[in-house]
Image 1 (cartoon, rainbow, N blue to C red):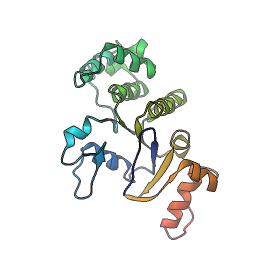
Image 2 (cartoon, rainbow, N blue to C red):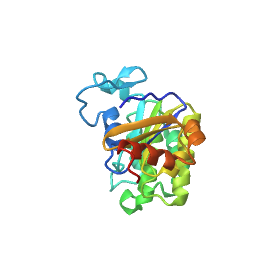
Image 3 (cartoon, rainbow, N blue to C red):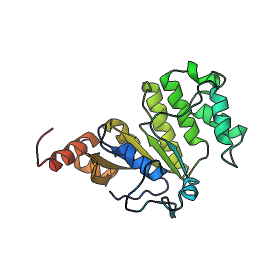
Image 4 (cartoon, helix red, strand yellow):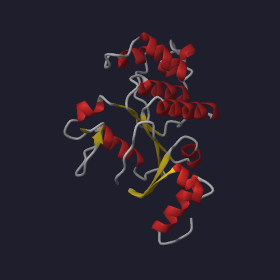
Length: 221
């Protein structure tokens, strides 16, 4: 696959479970070995200069890795040590953004799945990176949490971050992405601006169904 993502854009990777969304994100983040091709993050080769490229990147890929015996606040404070510019005020800000400030002293082991996901999102937001990678960020969240994730994505893009977000829910992608990439069976079937999609289709779901159908030789889903 090949795609570019500019500051302020939100690219939604849309595809069923096992289609390659997470693998794509892991490749960018250096969590899987890349056999060939090129990955550039802010002009830096993410393969040969991985550490330098990751200074521009923050991620929430699969389930957040949290210390169960520590509080939500302590988890964020430990992560903040990796960044020169993240202070206590920024930690408080992200806790408020994900609506977890009141639960900051609760141990992670006592938090629900949705609350853990919110803390994982807070960890990704800490450094205000140029590239924000979110893998199924609404996983385990209720409707209110899903709306919150959408607001977080749009706010990050408005502040100049490029956002790469994955989902198997077309409706969620439609409400936050500026362009959509359809992945199916490990292949990129197509990528298009959201405005162009909605000129030709009633919804992103119809766009997805059309591309997958064509890739199967016109067999209807």
